Length: 284
Image (cartoon, rainbow, N blue to C red; front, top):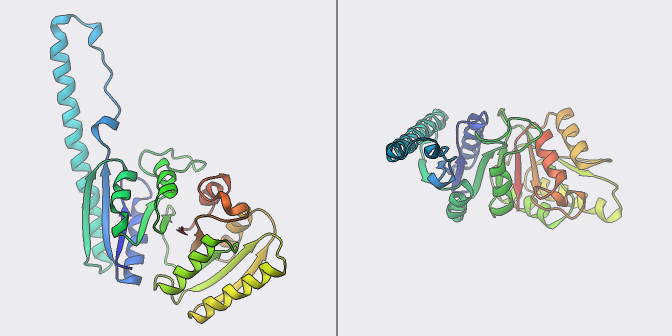
């Protein structure tokens, strides 16, 4: 892993995003790229046009004043972004990481990430951004759009970060889950951590064989592995398992071939991300 992209803003999740990126950087030796994206001026909420309510003689003066206010707002947003990035850089440096790059870009977050993703090995985001509904029943629209579009692994931070000692692999046997397994065994990010492998639903002979083979692959790669099978809905069984087994990180494939197929693009994983109170690492 060479480069980690951390998307930072002024939301409640910002410090957790920074902590997740620093943790990944420390474990892999990757450089940390800190990104703050400024919305294009055309995307900002427009000032109300009240010029029709006054005399024609004053109209040009009002329009000039509104333009000056818009320009002032743009400068304020620039300054705010620089302060956010400075804070993020200071937090990262406190962990001992020196290979840091600050990226202050203009454009939608999705467009900027799409432009940069070929240079990145991991993208880190919060569940919600500064403009998202604070209600825990809603996820940020940026997260939804990015998760649908990016090809690189995506680490979704929880509201608070804690040291990662053990992680859970949500395994359904599908291609995306196998890709997650392959990445885990090849990379240093999770090496040495306690590993739990959970399959939800009825397990036939073929599924049981797949679960055993998965555990063996992880053990061969040096992981200490615990396997489990739980009945019920994934979006209910997995958060319960995470809580009861003190799991610090959840790993999933970005698409499944069972009920978990709705990851990100449907209700199952939206509910999962809402209810699991630990970071979620997703592989496509």
